Amino acid sequence: MKFIMDFPVGITFDLGIVLLGYFCGSLPFSLWVTQMMRGVDVRSSGSGHATATNTMRQAGWRAGVMVLFLDIVKGFFPVYLAQVYGIHGWVVPFTATLAVLGHCWPLFAGFRGGMGLATSGGAILVVSPLGFLIGVGVLIVLVLIFRHSARASVVAGLLLPWIYWLIRFRGDLFWVTLGVGIVVAVRFFDDWNRKYRELWLDRQV
Image (cartoon, rainbow, N blue to C red):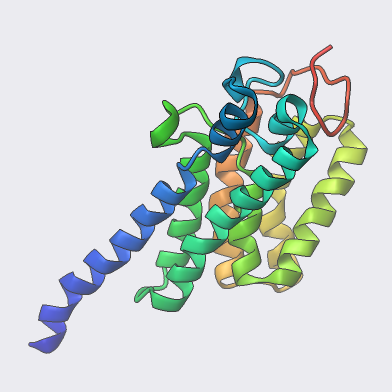
């Protein structure tokens, strides 16, 4: 009887954590910081995305680094809560995926957000700091190979979970990376044919 009564409560609590992931991801720090420092919508020029790199371009390096840190935190914080307080095993990967979804399609910014890499990194950092470093390394190698950030990010999003699987980094790391990787791949696919002048700041020719 106790199990029957606790089961819906546990599901409701876990769903609340997952939804918190989306709401945290939806906090548009790049919009707020750029608006505060330059009085413009970060999406109005440059890459057109609400990203740390576009913030750097429009409001300077300090603003960009601040946004990068905050975007990582909004992936880290809800996934940390899911890992500590979640009752069911699916809570961590779903929370991570929803946090990245929120960043890419934010409720609080007209569903026009960023690309999801920093927030994905924050989520991965919770479940495996070493996995985070490996993921950064794989992305850098792919960018150097493709010489195109968007294409490299699409491939990294789809490939990284299976790299972890092959090197026996499984469990939450595999499922988190699978979820956020699909979101990142879909988001960056929009920029597949984008032309870049600067490798890291994705300025159009």
